[in-house]
Length: 507
Image (cartoon, rainbow, N blue to C red; front, side, top):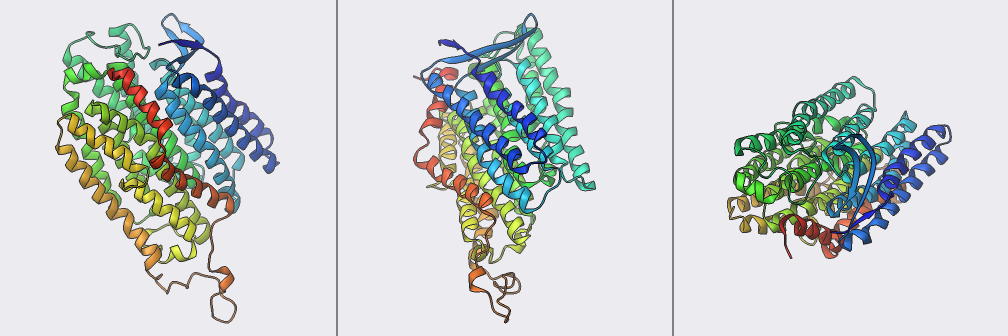
C-alpha cells in the first residue's frame, strides 16, 4: 500500500482549534462568533473530503508530528476506516452548528461562547482519534475528548447536571485509566510497538490466556462504546443540551468508542488471531445481551431523550456485534452501522430538541397530537425511527442486513434471532410515538396546546408551530440523509469494503 506524506491530517485537526480562539475573542459579537463556528466546520469537512480521492485510490496519508521517545510517536495515518469516521463526524458538525445556533438562541442559553468553544475542540479530538496511527496517539485524543466534553455535559450548571457530569467523568476517565491504559502498556511490553497494522500486532506475542486477557482489558477500557454494565454514563449525559446529546452522544463520543473497538479488533489483534482465540464464538453474545437489555430499558422510558439514550446503548452494540463476528459481511455491516446510526439518531435527537423548543415537551406521554402541530419535525422523526428499526427504504436496513448475512457466514444463526428480537423491540418503543403524534388527540384535545384566535377557537394561521428554521432545516437534512444512504451508500460502502479487504484479504 503506497504511503503519501502530507500535513493534511494536521490541518484538519487544527482548523477547529484555531476557530476556538476566534470564537473566544468574539464572545460579545454572537453573529461573528457563529460565523467562525460555521466557517471552521466547512473548512474542516473540506480538508477531510480533499483526502478522500487519495484513500479511494488505495493509498494512505501519514504525518509524524512529534517523537516523544523512540518508539512513541504522535503520528497520524489516514486510511479507509479513519476517513470514514472523519467524513461522518465533520459533515455532521456543519449541520449541528446551524442547529446549535437555533437552539441556544431560542432558549437564550447561558455560556454560549464556552459552548461553541468546547464543541470546536471536541471535533479536533474526534479527528485526532480518527487519524491516529498508533495506540499512543489515539489514547491522547481519546482522553482529550472526555475532558473537553465534560463542560458540555455540565453546561446547565444545576445540581443534576453536576451529579450526572461526575458520573460521566468517573466512568469514562476511570475505566480508561484503569483498563485501557493497562491494555496499551501490556501490548507495548509484549509486542514492542503500538503502531496499527492491518494484520494486527499481537499474533504470536503471548499465550492465548494472556491475549484474551488483553482483549478483555481493551473492551472494559473502551467505555465510550457503552456496553452494559459500563453504560450508565450515556443516559446521565442526556442532562446536556440537546445539540450536545445529538452530535457528541449520538455521533462523536459514542462513535469514538466503537471506532476504537474496530481499531482494536482489526488493527491491534487482527481477524485471524481473534478467530484463533475464539472471540467470535463468545463476544457476539455479550454484545447481544446489551442490544436486547438496553432495548427493553428504552421501552420503559417516558422521557424522550432517555428513551433515545438507551436506544443508543443498544444500537452501539450492533457495531461491536458485527466486528466480533469476524466475518466479511458482518464487519462491513459493523462499519456501515456507524454512519447509518449516526444520521438516524442525530435526526431523532434534533427532533427531541425541536419539540422542547417549540412545545416545551420532554415526555413521550405528552406527544399525542404533536404531529399535527409539527408535521415536518415528526415526519423527520418517523424517518429516523424507521432507520433505527432497520426497515427499508431507510439507511439503517443496510447495516442490519450485512450483519445478518455475516452471522450466517460465521455460522452464528442464533444471532439472527437477536437481530429479529431487537428489531421488534425497536418498533415497540418508536412506532407508538409516531402513532400517537399523528393519530391521537392530546390529553385536552389535540388543539389544546395551540394558540387561539381570541374567541375560543384555534387561530388557523398558527396551527403549524415548528421550531425555528435554524433547527428545522438541519433535522430535515439529516432525515433526508438517512434516505439517501439507503439508495446511494456508495462512498461509505466502498470505504467499508476497503477496510475489510485490508484486514481480511478480500479481493
